[in-house]
Image (cartoon, rainbow, N blue to C red):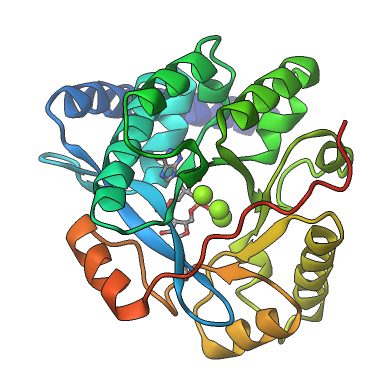
Length: 291
Ligand code: C2E
Ligand code: MG
Ligand code: MG
Ligand code: MG
């Protein structure tokens, strides 16, 4: 009996795998066409000062409306793009587009940080730093107004090479943030070793604040860690005033989340700018520990 069920399960999984593979191949193909046809776009979510509510930055988030597949969210296609390597082209487009938008806003007097997600495959490409340097030098966006959001998984691969690359990025003048902090292979050693400017506290630690005592304790600990290492702390996914109040009292610097605004189209972002006003931009605090 067990044997038979085992075989059946195997067949089921195999069929399922083929279906998944086919679906993934379809999405991969559609993404390549969408890039050529310019059907990707970026939306921008405000990052604001927790105290004043004024605008500090914008996180660029990718969107794709496909004729056949409909409106696709990053969770539905970014993992596939990472698997197939298409993320290298897509990520390069994201960086160029975010830099272009940042440049437009700078020219309009909207002086904010432009924050861009970088995936591991993209980061570890040999020419990543060079091509970013080129994009920046041919643009009017000051390098210190570009922030790269890196995940912990990036930092644990090829530590030596990663170190060189992060140093080169900081030499260019760009800022570095760790995204989804605390959800990856958290190794506190890399905070000491790498030239990081900001920790982004993952939404999973924020959503049940203050009822969930462990989450509240973790969020507070990350904020304290950031402060003692002279890094800035930003909370992700802040949806209500209770969460904002808690984070403010805990000493967090910034937040982003639906409480302020979901990610919006560029024209709507400009409306938010005039509504919220601009904050001063904080230069990175002196690093306590370097390599
Ligand atoms: P992330 O970088 O952690 O981005 C934050 C996500 O939380 C975004 O989802 C955002 O829309 C969502 N969010 C913001 N505020 C709230 C809130 O108050 N409540 C809730 N429930 N959600 C909130 P999104 O846009 O679907 O992106 C998901 C993930 O996909 C991102 O997580 C990021 O890892 C990845 N991603 C998005 N755009 C890009 C991109 O251009 N390149 C790369 N490599 N990854 C991207
Ligand atoms: Mg992010
Ligand atoms: Mg995040
Ligand atoms: Mg997150």
